[in-house]
Image 1: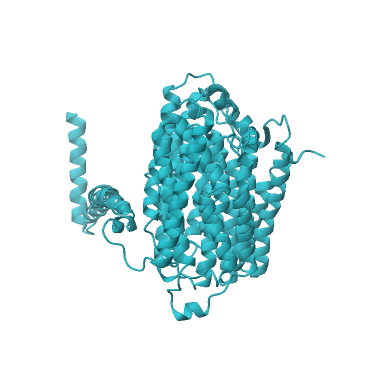
Image 2: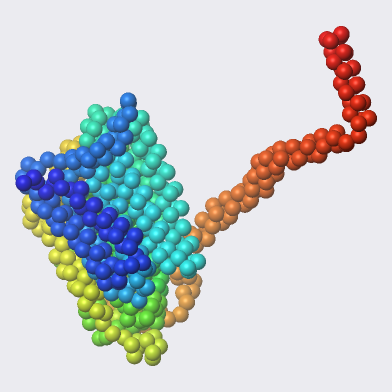
Length: 636
């Protein structure tokens, strides 16, 4: 029997089949059948991914390329439709299909109020989303990655605007689509430059040729910055981050899928996959790190004053993505991927936990109207608390290990990076436990009707919460730092072959002695605990119930960035468009086209006058015609 790697094409095929069945048969399938089909196909992909992952763990495993057919084959260019299986793609397959399956199961209950055909449409979209993301991470060249890249962009539009009759939701979906197209243009230009420079889009060939270039080569800087523009759109970094919080318009499981393990991590995957290009372009790495830090801090400040439970988590996602980019920018590629993995677990847990709260509160999302839910929703409360502790970075939960690895590398690269990163971590702990306290502690602040109907969610919703809580608690132990135990970082050993070329070229960073690292670790943990205790006690006793004032109003209104974009970009573009429409389109292009038609009509009306029906007039014109011919013959 062949190795499972040779059957890797089955991994994206199963969700594609689920999409086709649910999509084409949506009017004839019952809700239970639609839910089962949508979930089982992703489970099948997870099982195969697990077998493939097990093969990639073998010592001496080398990347395997599975070519299905030639996608483009011309005289000067051949681009195969091929999948590449290595440690990085295998890890992402597990995250996407594993977390994706749990979200599908959760959705079977959460979306149960939908009509059967819309229920099937929802699962068709989910399956197509998973298929596109699997294509993105499996592609053996940038073109296949780009196909998946555009696929998740389309699916995000469909899922965010799932309730398409709501104009506000439709606007949010359109905003996500347009802002992603801006980033995608940068990505596409980057691909053109890669093709021009290397004559191929296949990873192995591109990276081998890039290795022959000198560090800081201009073409590499241009390529990496253009690819980073694509990453800022897909992974919601400054300045293209404002679509992500608005994506909360979609159903809560969609928010978990987009914000946890799939779409927003596409940019991280793309840069991690292109690691050697960035290692050879230090300027681009600096840009990545600085933008990541700025995004992490900006989003954290906004999250502090949000009152919508999903908006807090959305800005939290933007902030955590910033940390991942910091890791990529300082060369901690393993740390960034590690944080992708741990973040997938605790952020999916937090979003699904928020969905459970919203379900119990009859679609209420304002945390000012919650409180005291711990007793009414024991499983949701316990699992949500685990997620909060994990994202805050408290030992020994997963967020501690992945965030600590990024901060240590940031300290080795630049002390300022570390200080700003630590401030962001403190804000993360503060706003997450503000959210926790206002939701689960204190007394209930909603209506009597809401309180009367409070109940724990069904098992289809709580089971994924429990599984994700366990993963959020223990996943960090695959990346135990050297400070605790030398050579115990299993994830780093696993991913070493993927990042080997970059590791070999990176100059040895200044080492931090263990005593200093221990001191920084103790201080950071103490500060984070202080932030947690303050937020817990303060907001349990004195929850925010009114509108923000002063500087808090600026944060509550998201630094007015949307309004700024509207003033300096949207309105001028609309005004310019109106000018073009009025003077170029209507008066110019339409005027020319309509003018031709009107001139033909006018000419026809004038020529028609020659056909008067009077014989004398015809004889006159005939005589005049003969005279004209005589003149031409005699004098010309």
